[in-house]
Length: 190
Image (tube, rainbow, N blue to C red; front, side):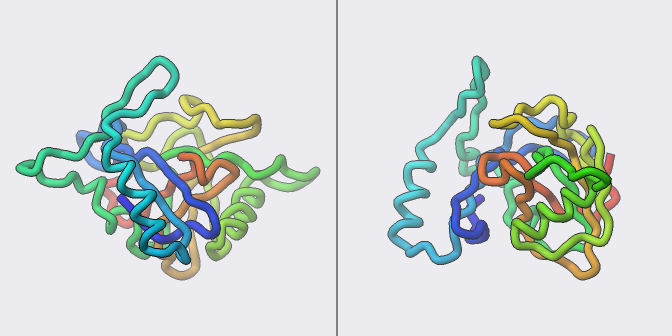
């Protein structure tokens, strides 16, 4: 999946198989978000090498991310619309790493709401936190290891108006964590 959102920085994330009855959380592919202003040649220069990637290494674990065979239908989890369509409610499939620790008397939910705004989205009207994602198949938050120290958690966000994605939130949003997906289908929920 390739998208033009992302502010001034490129961002990437593993696209997991989540949100349906048989979801197991395995890797479907790799998402890349490039800055809006990037010219076509630079976009091509970024994308072509990625088309050659067939696996990623995570410590001692190797994960396949190759393109599906031509005769196989692209999984719904790799459809752009799955991650980008406007929704009032969004939930994380990879945990959000807090940008900072809460100040004395400040709720973690407010820190997350601040992170959402800092990433360029409207402030959510409701924030829920937890170890579990709203999406079936997504690993627990504690199963992830952020690049740096800090607090990380799965989130569910509600907005006053529909927000179009993709949504990438939190300190490690450019490095695979803080990926959210629209929640507008009860079948997606655990």
